[in-house]
Picture 1 (spheres, protein in one colour):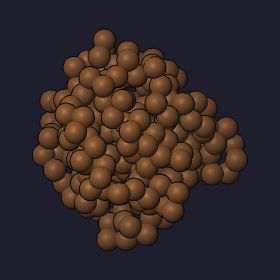
Picture 2 (cartoon, rainbow, N blue to C red):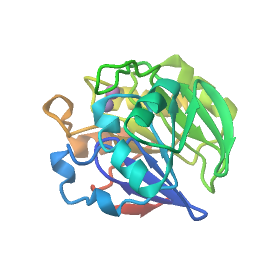
Picture 3 (tube, helix red, strand yellow):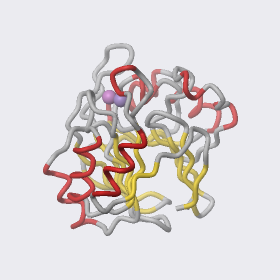
Picture 4 (cartoon, rainbow, N blue to C red):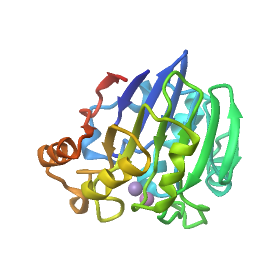
Length: 225
Ligand code: NI
Ligand code: MN
């Protein structure tokens, strides 16, 4: 599986000729200036919640690519108002897509759309059906519900926020890695703004000391997982 990092909490996975983009926020991120959003392709776009730093580039990319937007009902309703046609609304639970089974699971956070409309409940995603199983928690603090994840799947990797302030910090993400029983964590949601600046080297070391791997891809980098 190919994993491409577009900065902040935006990334794509590609496998079996299927490209899935998550939480498109690029044009408003100074650190992601080198990413050309016109060149991003997607078959599906999964959105964890309605905050601007997760949906800012959703409508243009969805409209250009024709990708199907999968998100909470309220996020989807907002996307439709922006002219997005292909959508699949969800609430917490699971559904089966051409890329396999998908769980949409709770996150402890908030969710309001950029126009002030309701964003539904914030969530995260567990993908079972591609060649690698993975969990993206979305924006959340550490929560006991993460302990359910190993009942659903033995993860190959997970994407967790590590920047603190609005989400888990590095220490909480290490506990989350234990809860979800996953050795390989890709850190997101750090360094973009002043509140979430971290010491990357120290973060990687802390994970290593805890017996786990923290991967911090460079923005624009594609890695094989
Ligand atoms: Ni948020
Ligand atoms: Mn966020």
